[in-house]
Length: 479
Length: 137
Image 1 (cartoon, rainbow over the protein chains, first blue to last red):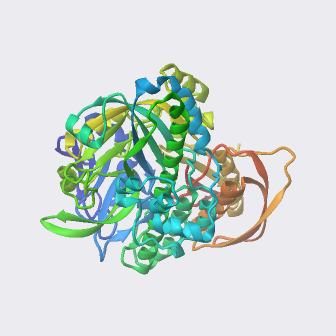
Image 2: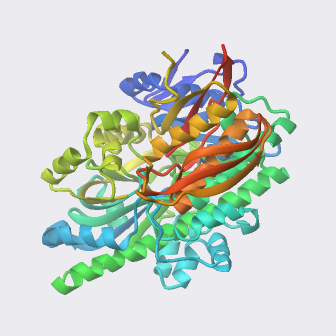
């Protein structure tokens, strides 16, 4: 395969690599990661996305890229109507999987004697694990409101603060969601899962700000050394999974009628402006809103846990919301391409929006800075708060990495690591672990992931996001 | 010796199975049993057998296989039921009607979020059908 390095940390596979490519494929890496990505099929999957009708500029993969299904994880693909398509596989099954970061005014030192109790309270208050529903069973009408209003629904019910919405991508609500496009099956999967974490790689983590890299920015974000912060990583649960399943099935037939020749059936798609494309976009937005509401309800529960544990000890327990971002989504956005403002459908699958300063989409508090970019690491390692940049707007349709990125399969991880041993090792490092399944814990072992510090070095070095603060874990809750 | 009815193969992000059958119908049954392995399905002792009717139509055999497994995964998630036996009343590459017999799980270790079409192709050679199926977990 012909791969050229075209800038520090940026590699390109030219369009001539394969006859069906419409644009080149680019990926961010250092030399070692560039060699490592050849070990799985992520580059082949990236090239496949370069064949999508209406694709613009180049397709991209972030340095946490790894093999997925259809699109690689870490993929960013922009298409332009009228020819441009939307592909459900370019969003993935966990629609609007994302990260929310809450931050306190208390320090790790102040809460150190209460971490065991906090971990247990979070595990009790935030339902997690396979097949685990929550205590909020939604009526059909209320589920419709969730899908239309997103996090606003939760705040209206008293499950959150109005200022949380301002600090959520899209204000926690994508306009144009249509519950009528969501199947009965998807509804039944979502009805009792509101406010639940699920299983797999989803987690709640209590962290400490270990290091501030940019003091001025950290101050504006409300971050300071030794501060307690909480990350929530989860998405739209069964409702979103079913919306994607329904769309991928429906489009198998439609893609043939559009005459598309696709290298992988998981890439099925329809023009964004076709009835099929519009129907998927409306259903995807409904699922994305469910996810915003889900993280909002979880945030409310986490605040309750903090109050219950810390208030009696006289420790400030309040948590404010720094930001909430989606990393599996497709959105209509305006970007400047070749000197012209163009409206594009930007797919981010395992990639985070990283809009730079001046973007009108950002809340007033961040508009002159760029948006917070939340990059959770693997369990037991560091995570990062970054900031979006003007370079990201020029290079990556305003996108950056979303995490560490898997290196080993879940199967391999379980062969190499025992859940009980891993839990012991994490606890010896002072990290409290509450997990529903030890086998599930083993699949998420830190050794199964790339080094997140290195991934962040690459996006920082390439200029598509800048380091603000490094977080280290104190307690992890997993399904 | 015949190769196993299903076996797990490595996939970086998710879980993948190679499934085999002496007929297309047997491939579908073995895929369901393979998915039980991924789900970590363990029936509750003494659990009563339940029956679900499944009627599906699709544009081709691959789509039908995805729909079939998605249907079973739906019951696994929403009712915590794993399936152990199937009776097919109708089976073709594009349609099936079946009774699926299953029991409540004592435990489901894993949720299958979705069954994907990624690289999915059912191959037939020397009287054996094979497919590699990637599950989003």
